[in-house]
Image (cartoon, rainbow, N blue to C red; front, side, top):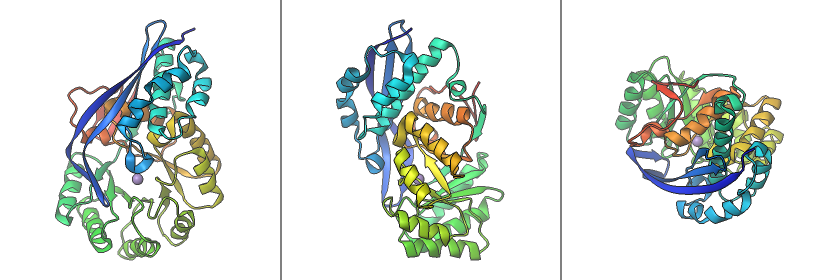
Length: 343
Ligand code: MN
């Protein structure tokens, strides 16, 4: 038996190697909160919360302010009864990234106590995944240059951010595809197209012989009808990202037949809802991607362990740690080019 004796929140600041730009916004640094769960036997479980104001309405200050609340909620709880801790931390409704960090830290401590790896705890299906890398929204020249750089580093799945200017986006996608032969492409508009533009965009790509694997969150997160409209007018699969945070969102998207794929991020759902969404998706024949927010290596480790263990992600977009300046690599995985290995 091992009960939680202490919980620590530690603020960490990271700088991006170069500004990361999506439609109508960019970031140059991030403040993440490391979560340590300490058991009575002295085991320390590590988790990370990467708060996102754009996605979740969270700030680092909000997360830090919840330290004593989280202690009230789960101090003295038995880590082997992790489902009970999941049920309690499901109440962190307005801070899903904190829910993720706390839930993973509990699992990390439990795995250390039981001497198994977290990817085995989650099911042990795979010990290797392949990640994409992301091209920011910039000038067309800069976007092509960044894509070629990624290609030369050996990445064969490229995520292209769009959503700012329809014609420039089309040209950027054409040029990137022309310069990176043999790659698969995820195109992400981060909610920033109108319905009309989204449909025009995919039809134009298709008629020009461009094949993309996924078109992610073309329209507003609240426009479920709109997502469905794009889906039924698109030659390419449509993926929900911002529209999908909780298992209840997943159920609604399935009922409405709105998308072909879900992009699960632990920072939106925590571990508990991510597990539920995986099962809903498998039941409804929805494909799966796992994504990230601005996690450092210790935070990406959470998604790596989850994705390998669960083993059912068609695409892994786990590249935020590769974008941050970090003095020490702290994941329990190995990054070999685009490959991520555990075990
Ligand atoms: Mn996205």
